[in-house]
Length: 160
Image: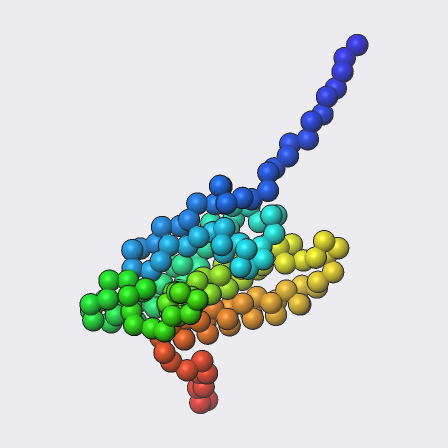
């Protein structure tokens, strides 16, 4: 008599132990993935690997947008984003908080865009159209945070 034993493979939920922070370039702050997951309300269905990849893409995107601004600040003698003069809120530099907001928004936009189930309810009631607007809103939030860091207006108008 043969027996068949089927034990399902269980994937443990994402946890802070498996989500080590991303070491940034030394000028911008490191990115704590566990904090990012909590702040952006990312479900456990987003694996640590997916989250890390999306956050790395966000760091590149934000870094590209801030490269000229960063160069000016470094030339002025500021060793990191946290040392650039800015008001502090809740004990942290406003600029560091804006940077975290930009990274979070771009990370979640990337995840929602690539993995449509990330931002759906358990019943999957959100339509693709709603998700598309969510992605656009997240990218807008990221862009606004970057523009706030640069100290430029949020509105860009081009005459046709």
